[in-house]
Length: 391
Image (cartoon, rainbow, N blue to C red; front, side, top):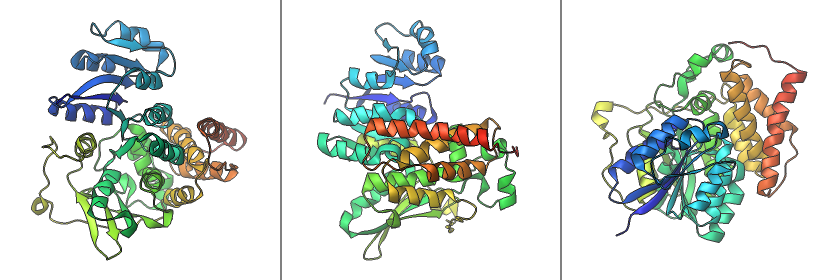
């Protein structure tokens, strides 16, 4: 049997590195034929020398020639602009792992779907921004979109226990992040260092801050709405500090099917690659007796209003996902730079969302316009009404 050809978009990030760890254990079945990174050109060069892919791409144009000088013989650099999309178009592959943080990965992900590829989707943003467009395109081209993030992989696996029309609700679990037990006053005064201290997962800074605000769960509500075709009121969130039960599905007969495992991204990554087969995985095994107990708590939407916004965007649809995501990205970055306070991330995002005139059934160019408008709107709001920094 011939090997499956794989491209990784975002290979230098934490998900990309986990994907490469999985692929190293599946070397008899998969070949890495394309790697793409954002700014970490030295790490990308190191990966290219180890994996020897046919092509590499770097989004950061200022370091493309430095990268080219360190590539192995036979490995071609896709330089210039729109490198991620051009990589997808250049390589006839079986699977594209999409793990680019933020909105930057959307055009390449959409192009992979247009080409009918299997897309193993790690980043939430493409479905948050363009869920309707991506899913309708996949239906037309026959592309398969399989989730890599642990919560949606868990739902995907649990759904196989019954028919979709018999599902009553899905429940996404959340660790609660570093501020699960924080007071409103502590949240107002939270520092970047505090917010980056995640108790369970090791992730990049943007995603870790999203976990602290629970924006990541708001994004997952929107993602689940499009990926699985459920309405917003069928999607619940529960706090589960141990991060062992990754999500669950409740059927109309009251049966609740859950997927459990140690908090290791390699498990959902491997399942997306090998589906419907399962193979031994390098992730550590779960021992319930060592764990002792599992905890489940109702989320506090007063302290974490992002969850309410996630349901709102999932219900309204259209261009609101693009605006919501873009405003959050900008505010997340501003917080990490010390320009706004922790709670201002959600406050500003909600203000931008409220100022937006929704476009129903938007095309890609309209979504890109909405994204750009939201980013400018954040800056405009700060310019006219500066926010006092608290960290």
